[in-house]
Image 1: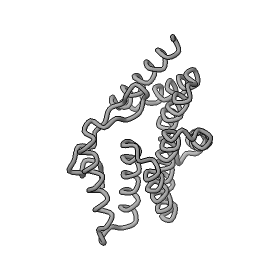
Image 2: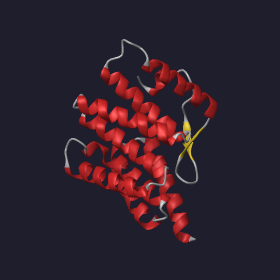
Image 3: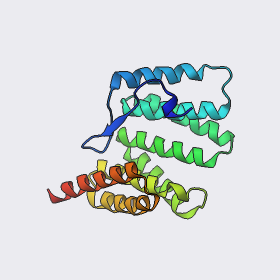
Length: 186
């Protein structure tokens, strides 16, 4: 299942703390209920269940249900490990690290982001996710008020993203850089 398959508004924007904010929280909650219902579909294969758990974990974080987010993301990671889907494990570990960050458990989020960034830099299986690892590591550091370090990661992400030419990703990174630079000027 893809986000576009969910018959509800799951869109969000980034707020001043660089965190996702739902554009329509009520509709996002209905969309999460829809995803939950889909998990009970007996015809789903394990891959589809893993995707659903990953999406649920992401949206649960966005609406502030951090413990449930962790539960679903760990479920996704377990499923994808069993399926030997390394990249899907990596993506859901990034999402889980974000949830620990939002929970202000920086000991865990720092360790996870350090490991994921190292994987993305040094293993060909994950190289295409380097920009995401840098961007999310930057947000993690931003939350800890380590603005100089965060800015360095955002700039690395932007350099890679300009090569991919995805305007939405470039815009989000440029906004993060601008926000970080404002914090550094204060």
